[in-house]
Length: 362
Length: 128
Image (cartoon, rainbow over all chains, first blue to last red):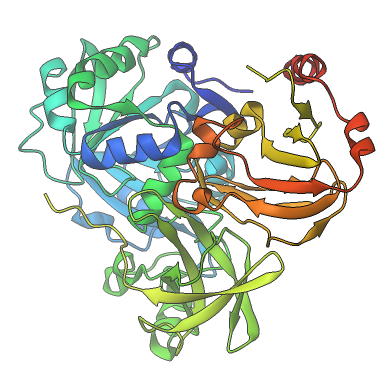
């Protein structure tokens, strides 16, 4: 099993560790609910070093990123970041990813841990005649996410990057605790916050310093368990649950990442056609009307007939009810529409609700 | 940690016996593995349970698991307090976190269960 460079830090804090995509990762420290609420009300620190980092460099770097992504990377200048998809030729997801423009000829793609090797192989296979260099230095990168309204107060004293003026989805190089880092105002929780990337071989002290500095503010270390409940409340999709190589960004309610006027990209023709003809299903948010907790893969019944399965579903620590995401047939996706979910031997009522479930108010 | 006068199963349930009545819950080991418990599906009073029949399910934030009856009998009480405070299963698994009380049909069922000392040895084996 692979270990991040913060493994000893997690063990010192008494984390429960699990195997996740070949990595030995913390699933929880004090408990999912406590960690979730700490992140919503103060701050949370996450080790996300298992994420993948792929470098695209050279003269055709921009043209190549434009080819594999439906969003318009030409709008990025150095220091800007974009959420997008890595597309199949069928207009479906190989993965979702962040594109960091670090230099006109250097783009950093941040991809899911579960998909890093698959994505890199796929990207290499798309290289063709593009004049680019490709590299997958994922194992050399460490990555932390500091999320929550107290993130600036906690991080600013230990970095020369001036955090407050940074806009959402921008990044800057600088030092954190004297170590070279890339700091971006991004995250996967619905909160304000930062992600810190470093190639430093001993980044452990950064973790300890943030934990210490964050204590008076109510910061807690957060494991993969609460990472999932936090991202779901904010309706941030998870590859493998909500999006995959059978779903398109239009179906996943991510039309805004598809820029039809930017020129050719993989799957473009399929998405143009789907956009003209209309989608037949859409990813929507639901809550259970009856008691119970709807979880991924539970069967979904519309008008008494099975119409797919739950994509994501969990107990929401903030709203204290069962929330989730599901693909429903167009025509059944309006807010308030009722349907049923099979939980073991019972069918319970659910209804479509507005998303995101949680939106920060600061 | 594990009360000496309780009986234990390999599925991490405990039974406390008082006359013909058996109180059933899940062990500290089980609650620790489940994490934050948020919902417990309780059986109806009057329901008859056989040994190893499903009592109900326990939902934590991250997973659902079934609770099995360690003994046979009729459900005489379900801990409805858990509807309002399911966290009792985490905070006091061997006490306030009890799940049901059964009127035992066959006290011989207890002979198949482990003592506290045996259960602790069993746990050491699981963690090794």
